[in-house]
Length: 97
Image 1 (cartoon, helix red, strand yellow):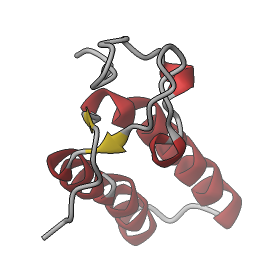
Image 2 (cartoon, rainbow, N blue to C red):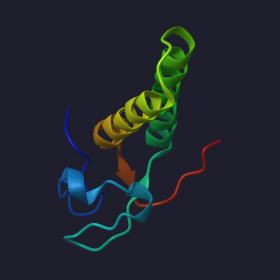
Image 3 (cartoon, helix red, strand yellow):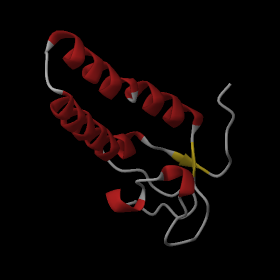
Image 4 (cartoon, one colour):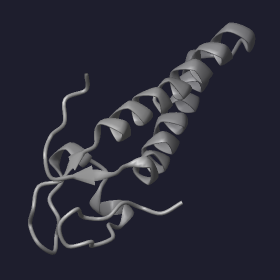
């Protein structure tokens, strides 16, 4: 898996550069980056995985509230690290529908 690149200058982003993709500008050319429709759809589906894991842990494994919070934060952090590998950028904001 590779991190995405700028639609204008083909600069390959580093992980720390694209943590918040909705506020993303290319550090080389300064152009605004918009997530493609497919990227937003795929990462939104991928976002349900942490919620499902947390729900299943709560349903089948009786853990304390503090342990559930720690597990939930770990899963969300893991999602934030993995999600940028599924981003693709374009020059225009595309409608979801």
